[in-house]
Length: 177
Image (cartoon, rainbow, N blue to C red; front, side, top):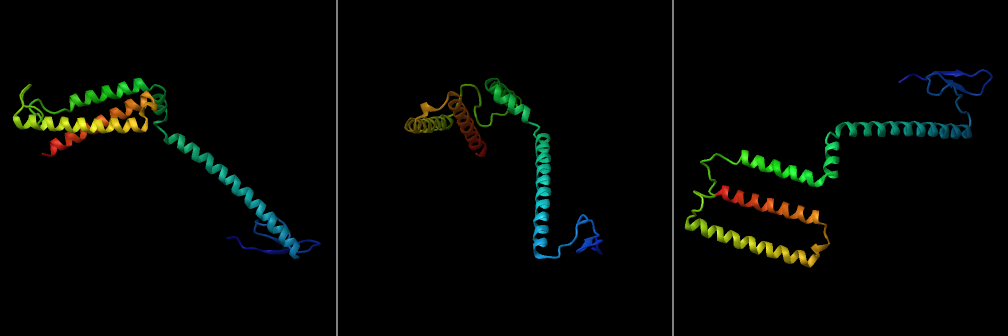
């Protein structure tokens, strides 16, 4: 910190601060002058803080706009919902076909087309009964809460999401065996 050097003002009533902080103002000699000086200092500090806060906000907005690399893509997806959904579905289908496993692997699903063992048939019947019960419960609950009030997009999104979750759950169960 700079040192404060007391210098008497010519003709005057106080000392001038020589550290540059006082900006050449005379030091107060009375309580009223000290209060006025404090209020002036508060005003200058408040103005400085406002300017700093404004600059910080500008820098923050600049940084956010630079970091939002997906902003344009997100806007296009929101403005073109159905084509985006179709692209996502097609991409998932392609990835599933590419990464679906080797030809010799069946992941316990089927050995040959149309042939299931007795145990697999029982498991399939049990799974279908569970799915039927789950869908029936969901339909009853939706009717109670008035699902007809939701938009078509919300209903499709919910059904697709639930179908994906159910499929992944079943797949995980089968892989865990």
